Length: 438
Image (cartoon, rainbow, N blue to C red):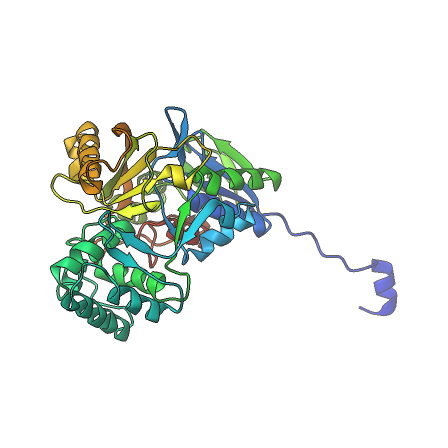
């Protein structure tokens, strides 16, 4: 263009780029992560959630007027994306989470307690200091950990945790491996993926100082992310439609329609079966993979015992045929001032058999387990069962060679959730990572 022509045409201009309209279907932790990331990328986000509240399978519930949760969730120091997301929406992890070095301590005082410091020396010191183990127990675990590290924390795709740890002594498997496995994968060691278990061990225990720290909620799950994320999203102009179950997705040119409303892209952050229902007419092969999961429930037994105080805010328990729980939490210590003084939460992971027995039987068995574990006279009053809550599809069974669906469903349609392909089992960190990636 010559000078005269440029003067006639006026200054060069660029048409403004249209703002992308993105629908997020599902308001659990994956959906919230996706919505926040979408807003951060400059999109106009509309979030659909079928329930009247956000949070999905990690949410606050009211129990006799107390702000409790549908289950006890533990975060760890390695949950870097979750912690960053909390900070982004105005939730302060330093105030909302009690950070403690990893301690799996039983009522008799025995247990693994990681000291501060570099990961490998801290682990070695903790194993050598384990009260109740003999030299064979300690040596077997240290040698196995060395082999796992030398292999890059990898094993055969079809290897179970039980097979992976067969060389350990029965005491080490009972005291450490089994509770770690069921806590991280919600799958019994006999059926759990050894490959995923090793990935969890690597990132939690051996990825740097503080990665294995326990981050115990000092507030309800709703206060950790769902409530601050909801306020942040509304402040940023996102549209939140709670109590809206999406009925259908439909391709529309280069975009999509959600119940007839047009969007440029959709993040399908609903639970696997709900996602499969919506995706089936569009991507039947993907939907079949999402629908094929087997699930494992988690039961939380809330006990009320006025004046009760545990030696630690979280303690391990030995489970067995008549003892359902693997962990117990002192909510009065963790959440002072919320009316939870004297409330204890017992967690039953891998709870399929106990759900079959019924919640009343599970609650009574957990109560008897607590009384037996801590011994006569340990409680200032007689504990009673406050409530039993069951999350029947808490997590997918994390078995060897599990076929998890990919994040890509169709052009412009992405899946997010702890169930999509990824390195971790069903965890909050896995959900957040999947939401941000989508």
